[in-house]
Amino acid sequence: MLLEKDFIYNGTLEGLEKGSFEWSAPSNIALVKYWGKKEHQIPANPSVSFTLNNCKTVTKLSFVKKESDNGFSFDLLFEGKEKETFKPKIQKFFERIESYCPYLKNYHFTIDTLNTFPHSSGIASSASGMAALAMNIMNLEKTLNPEMEESYFYSKASFLARLGSGSACRSVKGNVVVWGAHKEIEGSTDLFGITFPETIHDVFNNYQDTILLVDKGEKQVSSTVGHDLMHGHPFAEQRFEQAHENLSKIKTILQNGDLENFIKVVESEALILHAVMMTSVPYYILMKPNTLEIINRIWKYRSETGVPVCFTLDAGANVHVLYPQQVKEKVLEFIQQELVGYCQNSQYICDEIGKGSEKIN
Ligand code: DP6
View 1 (cartoon, helix red, strand yellow):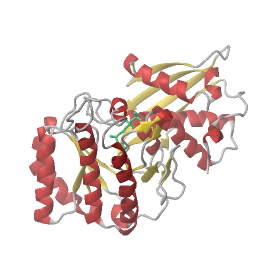
View 2 (cartoon, helix red, strand yellow; view 1 turned 45 degrees about the horizontal axis):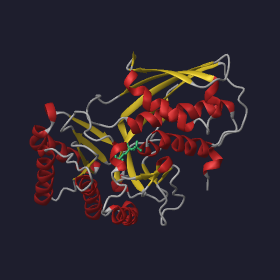
View 3 (cartoon, helix red, strand yellow; view 1 turned 180 degrees about the horizontal axis):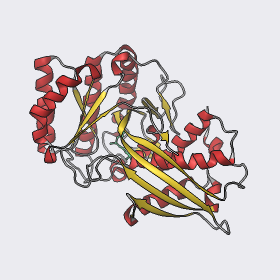
View 4 (cartoon, helix red, strand yellow; view 1 turned 135 degrees about the horizontal axis):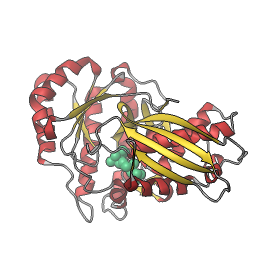
């Protein structure tokens, strides 16, 4: 089992004078939610997610060696234009990972990044963004240390991504990723995400996630502020315990394909996330009336047709509609007929379970 100290690079700092890499990393959607953390981005409870396929960040990292190793520096381009507002988060990320990646201080970087999904769609890009950046940084480390094993490469990439944004550590690999130590999941750790170690039932192959864009505005509560609300929350301990129990249930479900219980756990997790937000101090309601309309319609459709479609939510108003590929046609017809009217500008994004980060150049 890799420990934190194993991620401190202590090899040569003599490497490339300049160059560039390019990686993409997808977003992910949690089935059991990460909500609450300790210091150093250690989750308060384990979580599990489906890695997505279409909602991605594509990041090119160019680097030039500096005259003196007096600290890293970087420029940031988003869709080809300088983006000052993203810089503090990246700066903080570099500062957090510096001690694990001492070679960073030798370089000036240009980070050129874009998302394949519409920005200001209310879809968090921090998971895909931090994962794509972490992949590029590990690519640089691999050129300094070509002997590095592939499994270490991905584990450290996930470890670094976690320090950028917790859920980002679940975007490095596919198709189902567990982050956080859980007694029944072999190899699970708080330090990085691991691919779900058991064989997954065929019903989850190409599982669909249609994201209904209910509210495309800025998030009312940033997730970092949101996680803080769990400190001193009256239900925190019960919630963390429940996440462990739900992960045990999901572990069995992912192997036996029991969709009825899958739906129960996944929808309950989504509502719990919102319930703890409503009972925090200060409190928030992040759903919109249309979120509830959609949930009610999904419930009605499911009880009338028996089609195993369910919803999950992030820390916002958008609804992720999850269903097996076998019922895709039916569910898309239902979405088009009954749900698009509740989406802002009738917008939704079709995605599905995917394989994780990919090297482009
Ligand atoms: C509701 O990973 O965005 O999406 O670690 O502060 O960057 P930070 O938080 P972040 O939190 C995601 C929370 C969530 C649930 C989840 O993805 O598990």
